[in-house]
Each structure stands twice: as C-alpha cells, then as structure tokens.
Amino acid sequence: MPVLATLLVALIAAVLTPGRAEAASLQEVTGFGSNPGALRMFRYVPDGLPAGRPVVVALHGCTQNASGYGTGSGWLQLADRWGFSVVLPQQQSANNASSCFNWFQSGDIARGQGEAASVAQMVDRQLADVSGDASRVYVTGLSAGGGMSAVMMAAYPERFAAGGIVAGLPYGCAQAAGSPYVCMYVGATQTPRQWGDRVRAARPGYTGPWPTLIAFQGTADYTVKPVNMTDLMRQWTDVHGADQAADVSDTVAGYPHQVFRDAGGRAVVETYSITGMGHGQPVDPGSGSEQCGSVGAYVLDVNLCAAYRMGRAWGLG
Image 1 (cartoon, rainbow, N blue to C red):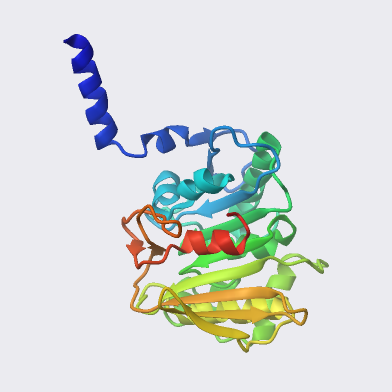
Image 2 (image 1 turned 90 degrees about the horizontal axis):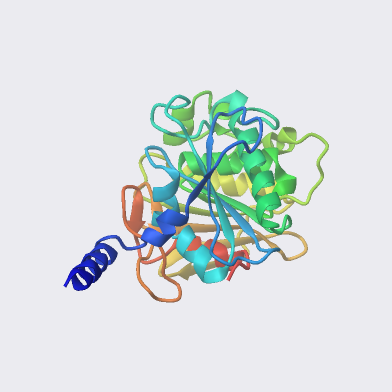
C-alpha cells in the first residue's frame, strides 16, 4: 500500500506540474564576466546536446522573468525539439522597477557598457561552456527585450547572425525621439539613412556582415505603436543596403507578411503584422509541428508562434 500511495502521489505531481523537467533544467550562471549591467544569467541546455549547436538569446519583456518568458514564448520547447541552447538574461528590480531592460539608457546600449556588455559576456560564456557554434548565435526578445535585441544587433553585430524583435523598437529610438515614451507611443521622425546611421555609429568601422531581422507587431498594440516595426524595417534595410519596397507581400497563418531582399536577393528583413493583436508575444499552443508556446501575461494565442517562425527562418529546425 505505501508503494501504491507513493506512485499515486508521484502521478498527481506529474499531472499538476507539467514541464517541471524543463524548469528544473533552467540553470543560473554566475561569474560570467564583469557584468557591468548587473543582470542575471540563466540558460537552458537540452540533455545530451552535442557540441557545435546554435545558441538563442531570449530577452523577456517588462514585468516578466527569464523562466516565464523562456517557457511561454516556446523557446525552451523548440530547444528540445530542434537541439540548441538558450541564454535567458534576467533584469533585476534594482536596475529597473518594472524589470524592463534599459533599451533607452545611453549607458546600457553602447558597446562595452552596461546591460549590452553584460549580455555579450553571457554569449561568450555560453559558447565556451557548451562549445556552441559562434556563427549561429541569435538574439530575440519582447517589448523592452525587443528593444534590447536591437541594441545587441547594433552594438555587437559580429556576434549575431540574426535578430527577432517582437513589439520592440529600433536602435537609438529614445534618443531620436527625445524620450522613450515618445518613441513607444508616437515614434521618431527619421529617414531610413538616419536610422541606419544610428546602427553604424554603434560599432564604428564595422563593415559587416550585419544581422538579419525578423519583426512581429500587433496592429492593436497601444504600448509600442506599430510605427516602430516600420521604423525597424527602415533601419535594417538601410543597414543592409536594401530599399524599403517589399520583395514579397503575402500572408502567413492569415497575417500580412513581407520580405525585403538585398541586391544579392538575400532576405535581410521580414515583418509579420499580427492583425488585431495587442502588446505581447504571438504563440500557438499545441502539439502540432508549427505550434509552440503557452499563454500568459503578454503572451498571446493568435494561432501563430513567433519563435517557430524565427527558428525556421534561421535554419534551427
């Protein structure tokens, strides 16, 4: 009887705590560098992951944390499915009361400084620890995490093959608009060249290759207005020497999707406009091959999983 009781308790625990193995495998890493931005580093490494696999850096949004965003967005699920590791930086309330990454602070968005330098140190530590493929490192994030993803693409372009920005903002937007709130709610008035110049100035003398961009934005987002995705497109097409006319305009899962190619025909910017979606990360919970993620605060079921679309475009799966 005690054996049966023990088995029953274990079974109930398994039912009530789905994904507990994932959560248990999320590890905090300390001493990863000088950490000038005073961030925390978490990571997820699937069991038995071989050397030479890609690394995805996933940056949470305001009020979120590393574990919740990693699970909710679907990135941990895809890491198990496709075989890559995930670095999950976490903000501390001492840095920002709402746990937002400081994408708007000059001291946190410059190469070699603040939070940007801390995230770069996490990448270096992860590549060393798991013998990851340094040519296949990607950065993505939601909202303030999306803004910080643009920071990493601009300040450390040699470290990232591509970036995925969800409800985020172009690099230097707060400085261009004069305020982070003007940037978020109104946008900044810049030409594509001016946007591109902000990126080029972040890494003086660097001539490429530059990370490619995939961006997702809800049309009913009143926290980060959709003009910010347009400005991201303008910024990164200019960086890549492409024009601002879409080479492909179609729909994916019923949502408008555009692709912008450079002179060589390479897709350098993609945008997904999620009709009717508010502020959040698009997910599509379920067990289907294109499904991932789980619903939560600022993680919205719209029948399209942004992490899946990024991962496919990046050749992760």
